[in-house]
Length: 352
Length: 197
Image (cartoon, each protein chain N blue to C red):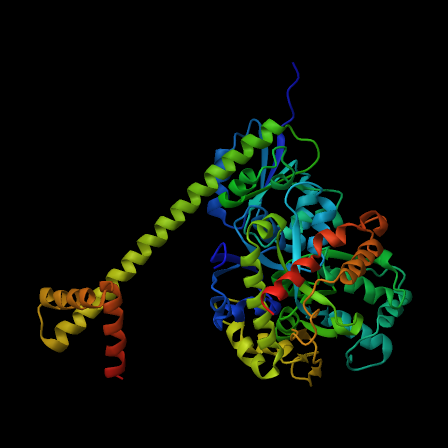
């Protein structure tokens, strides 16, 4: 028996909420004696506050969030992660106007994935007045850092590129109105933009970074301390779910469940592609095969789901490069406080 | 005696009816209140233009991450009241989040003013939510009644029953199966649709 058996878990309308949704629909939570209510959230800010307020027991989190929270707050309950849930899942899309501009400048009729940032550099060099505006969902997110990494890969002048924060659901409209030139967002929102006929996906996260943790399980340290067995049971259920998702044979089923009204409420042709390893560039054109677009791991290696300190260190480097922290050396203790490998190890001793 | 400058309050709310009840409740002699219902880039432009001291919005609004991270593109740096209140106990946070209100303070604002605006907002948000729930319940009740009437009519025509007999039959089925009369009515109608196809 666990300390608490009825749990409220927070998720966001994204393909990588799949470990939670599948655990619910396939009965993995029940397998470990948990009765779960999944609560779809509209913003990361509110999801985080509900964790602090104890309204949610645990939730899906952006991998950099537990680090950012521990940097901002020194006292009170800490937001921690004991487990990585998914890898990759993001992609960058640009507007049709920008696409045409790039094509014209480079004498091409279409853009092939992955698009080199060199074309942006060329575009800005051609017109000294030109500025670009991209959107990301959160400043402390892999999306934000991946955009920066892409620009930097070809020394694109960051002074002439603005990155604003918008929720995924508003990005397509912003692109359509010409308010932004492109964005980096988690699936299925790139496919949604392509299907709506307003965008062209030019590269996925795996083109920018090697396979990297994207969403993690988030909860408060005091919640874990008062309910360790509940935490281990929750982790075991999510592990089973990731294992189920790692089989490509199950991916269409996952897409079908996620597309339902009570989850993403989007059509199957929007939800399925990324889960099946397909990145649509333009609608009606051949999709690009990206097997690791939405990656969920199996427990082949003991450390597959572990929130390794090396991941945290890498994210601190990204924060420093983004100007969010002055020096990562000032925060060397933050990684150990936020990324709890010790809880992960303990959970696997309990549920080997 | 100097006249204190009115605190600039910005309410971000897409639901016009909800915005109205909050706006009406705030004393306009002490507060300079502005309401915005736009999203995306227009919202960002309008906020910069409004230069608010305090921002109020629904805790469930998708624009919360935009406001929370305004400092990335604007001079404004809103701080969530819930995270930086002086008494940071869990109950205060919980009460605010549960009430459905989120509030952000920009710059130095009189704490007493902030508290009174927030308490007004909490009261009105809750009142509005209650009205909405009542409306939903009434609608459900009406819908339920409609379904029952339809099933009753079907039984009356197919089985040549009186209205009372038809209703009794449905009620008996409901009691025998531990269901609500409305559920029985729904089942009857779904069977009816198959039979009459």
